[in-house]
Image 1: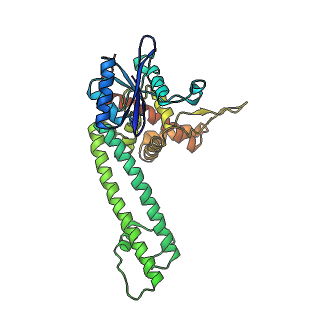
Image 2: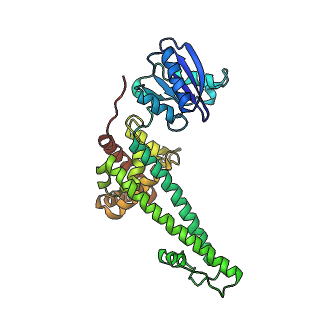
Image 3: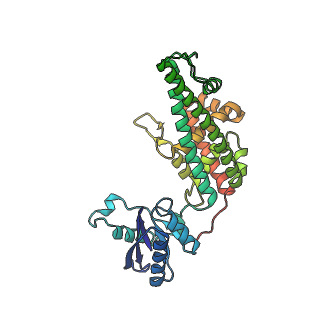
Length: 342
């Protein structure tokens, strides 16, 4: 069964596994009653089926949960590329049939399985929330710095405001002798400072929640130097589950730390890889910087490669590649392996 998922409706297509022939197609609304009708419709026409669902982590998340609860094997169907649509057009029925046929003839170990588990979902939600909170905190803090530099409010604005200065501004009260413009500036500075402090408190709570979830999923990971709740959570979220990233080389490529050849003639070199999961890349960069500061083995690694003619940037890239390899191997042993259907 292939499913083309959307916000309001899902389109289902039943395809014979042996021949690829289309048995039936239908569209149902994305409501509890609509999904019940869809599964009943599929069960009447195909007592046993494997589901290939597009968007198992977005539009198809609810359907995927229902299918898995019913004991149905579910795979992630990749949307067809534009070149593959040439000559056959596009419709929801066509895409549903393509989703079903995309898994035919493929070895089970090469098929993408949907992300599952409450802890993985919680980890993704916390990381997304942290990114939004941190972005808003930085914006508010930059706005506050700009305000105190543009209006004389009694603070030294030659440098960015410290946490103590932000706390002092957040405690300001209105003054009767201020002009209208000055009173508005003080009120806006106070609002921004209080918002920055509130966001800092929310980030601390987020940090503690991440620590609890990571401890439940892979407690030994945070024992590694440089791996705290945030960096460990980024590594786990990118790995997700067994089968998503099959080799440590693929994990390095996903992180954007796999070297890209950029040689020409007598020049032999590799260039920076700007692709991949930038959150994971940032986490590996943080780990590398911590180890270069506190780990004698990492400093020896740096010194050897600097002596060989590498630049500091190139050495950090090499170290990130090494960290990606070791982290992948630890995740393989720490995270519980889900059942693989056969």
